Image 1 (tube, rainbow, N blue to C red):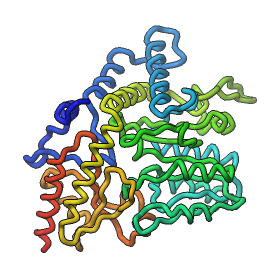
Image 2 (cartoon, rainbow, N blue to C red):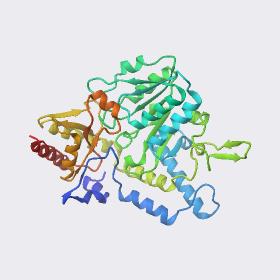
Image 3 (cartoon, rainbow, N blue to C red):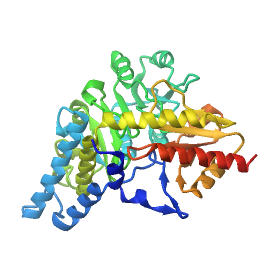
Image 4 (cartoon, helix red, strand yellow):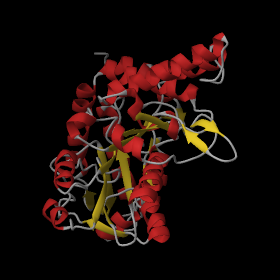
Length: 405
């Protein structure tokens, strides 16, 4: 395995100065930084193989097509999907969820049908379902949390009725770091013949995901949260569901034959990929997955867990500290407030010390309402963060706290 110094050397932005101080980047839950290997892949694609894919007979088009389809196979291996045809490239987690809500919802859901979400969902896994509710009159049910901010699994079981038609739940909370028991969630849903979508945006950078082991019907994630480029994401779907669902968008590539009388649709995965795909982004995402697996997801998880435990222990020593999210199984995220200091003030003053954290409701306002707060300060760790950076965070929080005494 590479040393932490070697890993950090792969990310030039980490040597940046902010207000004449070393950058301490602790906003990985929002987006991760990109290694040289990934950025070089983007440059190589535009300079050496750039050509629209699938429909060209010339050399460049065929070369770009091969790279794009190899990237699909790379994602298949990363998730352990059964077939590469089960991998749909999207613009990100949000579009992937919208695709399923629109396509599955329009075909299979009707007025009065029930969909189960959880209190800790990101807006991207709430708003599309609400839009479907406005169109079709579905009912949204919500799994509550216990006092450790873990999902109440007994309450989850009680939500199922003969009208329950879909479950859509996050793998890891972007606010709390809670790692949900998604394998059990899927198993319970399947006992009721209900399909499940898992939002893996906050899981794949930190945990090994095996969609066949989880038995998830749909699994989604974003490239930019796993050291890849922005604007590229993945929808994994079981072949039987994807074949049965109608296309999400119309246009080029997703067609088999078009006439003004009738259009027939392409086979998987192209049926769901209208228009020119981000073939540069897909190959850069594949490079990011190569990088992550070279470091080793087990090694990343161990390193981030050590940072999480140390940061939690030291932050809890600060008077007035309140950490939200105390699940037994937790990823490398700490959301907190200190006394009556507003989260925005804390974030701004940490920034002046070169420490980048996220403040606000983190696109999870229903969760904030459940916690009885407006927002938090969130520090989220990546593979390149260090104990020394955690020390700077702790010292920074203490300094801000002293200013408000």
